[in-house]
Image 1 (spheres, helix red, strand yellow):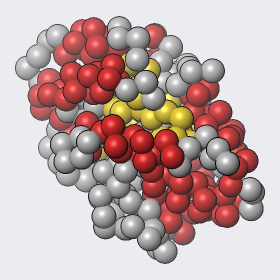
Image 2 (image 1 turned 180 degrees about the horizontal axis):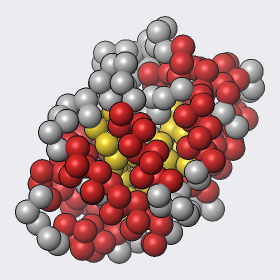
Image 3 (image 1 turned 120 degrees about the vertical axis):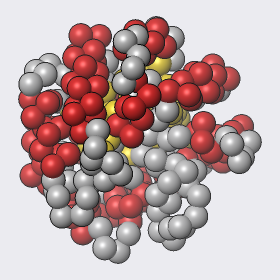
Length: 265
């Protein structure tokens, strides 16, 4: 029986390829139903690797941006945005990402993070491309979330994906109202992920996306091991159970959502 289609809306295949044969990784994923995946760059140094993988493998697409933890690399480069635009001209570059705000690792560059994110939000809107948003705060803090929401509201018409969502249901619904889909990763399967489980169960099905964020965030029972796109199935099965729907129906609907979000309809 052919497995129901799945779409991994966020997978760092370029990182996985450092330690594993990407052809074998993709073969395992396709055996579980993978139809396509999107590989966002997280470092300017990896732009070409992301594009190369998209050229090499039909199911692989790219996204290009400046990650919030990499903004120091553009501080003295007046052409950083033009470089991104040049890479976005590639036919398999589907999105701007991943970008956003990360106040967990380093708060000293908050202003530069916001400047870069605001510029990329405008670029996404003007190019009518989805933007893949990374948000991370220190425990118990919502500063990155609040600043991102403000910048998104200041860019009407932008659309995109809240990657590896970590907020509550109210914030998820606010972002949906702003034109964003919600990406749910393998950490939804963790026993202590009650807030994220409430989001996965409570948002409208037509705004739900699935992702691995591989090689990170392996779902249970593989928690702590390197992740790969084949394990998207465990996340999909868990979310289907949360929502009380058949696995095949959830897989098909989230894949349809992913195709719509990335303009592959």
